[in-house]
Structures are given as C-alpha cells and as structure tokens.
Length: 221
Image (cartoon, rainbow, N blue to C red; front, side, top):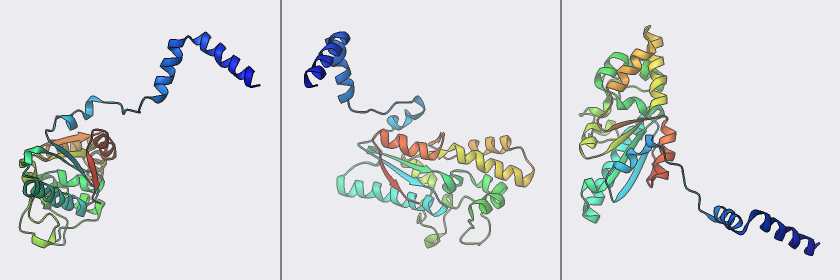
C-alpha cells in the first residue's frame, strides 16, 4: 500500500507538473490577507503613527467614546510627546449612538420619535432632547464626555464612522411617526452629519474593516 501511495503521488506530480505542484504548495502556505475595498480607503488616508477605533453603540457610549479618545490624545502628548495629528483616531457611532452624529436642527425636529426609539431623554430636562447633547456644554457631570463636544474632537483631527444602515432605520422611524417620506428624512440626516464624517454600509462592518486596516479596537458600549 505504501508503494502504491508513493506511485500515485509521483503520478499526480508528473501529471500536474513540478511547477504546478510548487504553486499549489505555495498557495497553501501563504498567509491569509483581507480583501481591500475602495469604500474603506479613507482609513488609510488618516495620518498617524498609531491607529485607534472607538466603537460606540449606545447614547452613553457615544459620550464615553469622546472622553476616552480625548484621554488617549492627552496621554499620548504628555507621555510620548506626540502631536494630536500623529494619531489616527476614529469614533464609530452605530446602533443607538448613531443619532448623536446629527445636528441640533435634527433633534429639534425629530427628537421626540428618535429619543423614544432609543429610550433616551435629556439628562437635564428629563424630556426628549431638542439639541444634540454631545454638541452642547453646561451638562457637567450629567454627561460622560465632560464638556468636550463632537465638533471639538473633529477639530483635533478625530474622524467618525457613521452607520448608514442605522441612519436609514431612524429616518424610517421619524417619517412613520410624523407622516413624512423616509427618503426625505434620510437626506436631511445625511446632510446634517458631523465634520469628518464617513458613512459606512453598517457600523459593524466598519469595526471589521478598521481592524483589517491596522486599527486597535476599543468597544465602549
């Protein structure tokens, strides 16, 4: 049987050709590499010696992501003498955190149905927000971002990955409650997004793509 196996192997090798066998062996031993898609190339375009992706999925998580990203920048400056521009930082806003990517005008117009959908109220008024609380100051310890706004983070070079799937869902929610066209509300949401915003097919996809592009992932909650 051993001689038969060796003969079959030799016959297979001869029929395939030495080069083909070598190529097949090379393919088996080659390390796996993720596919690259042009939609994700913006991750590579952010300058930085270090790459960090903060993954926020809740209203509280959106504020905590601001605080942790700010802490990372401050500690990098103090401990490593790195300028803020030397860090590539992305805050991912997906699931319930997605809504905090949009302007005060959106919250004033659609705050009631949107806050109802994510079970969130303004911690100061205990009512549906009429402003984006993470773009406002004066909340002090009531919010985890400690008075640092999303716009302030954008000015420090932070970018944002926004879940387009969730954006479409929330557009449908607001439209359904107010008797509007979902496509119109969706266009309003997109037009009101943060500076440095990148709409991604889904927030969870952005988590995967960021890791494949060399970003450390910190899930916030």
